[in-house]
Amino acid sequence: NAGVMQNPRHLVRRRGQEARLRCSPMKGHSHVYWYRQLPEEGLKFMVYLQKENIIDESGMPKERFSAEFPKEGPSILRIQQVVRGDSAAYFCASSPSGFETQYFGPGTRLLVL
Amino acid sequence: GESVGLHLPTLSVQEGDNSIINCAYSNSASDYFIWYKQESGKGPQFIIDIRSNMDKRQGQRVTVLLNKTVKHLSLQIAATQPGDSAVYFCAENSGGGADGLTFGKGTHLIIQP
Image 1: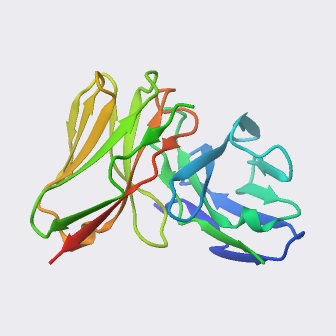
Image 2 (image 1 turned 30 degrees about the vertical axis):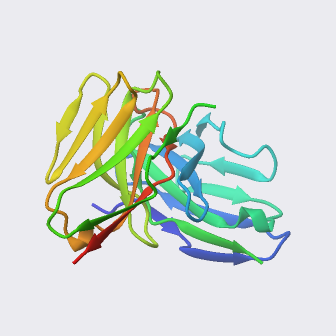
């Protein structure tokens, strides 16, 4: 049973470009969470989604960031007009339901030049 | 605001000794706690969890202790091995596991030969 998959593993963007991060949850998991991690820090919750629904986006910046989890396909975290401060590791986690352990993917390391 | 934090950023132990990593939390509504291990360049790996109706839970070589009176959580690793070297995060959730997790900053466990 494959774990949570994320791609790309590394992404380099110039300021002003768009970044798209993808997350495929574990098989049988319908709940997806996105977190951001800065160097030497813990993970910060961004958004919690179920299929076709955003459940909690209290950790998402108000502008430039959006997330979706369509009926088919992976969850997408989209960052428009990236700035250097967006450089971080972005992790996706999934769980079978909203009340069980979250399992993390390997992350996408975004570098904004 | 309410947060989860760790007492020590770095812990150095001899191989074969037991390790104890501590965590304080401030949200009295927290009812689900998890310990994750993160190796360099990888995503957090689930170690063990505990719900607030318990004060102790054991896994393979690991034990988690929860003291709700003083809002303190600890992870004990028995017979520490070189492969235990990593950053350890405690995380908490006030929704019984649902919604995003709140992470502490992490403790770097270093194993000395």
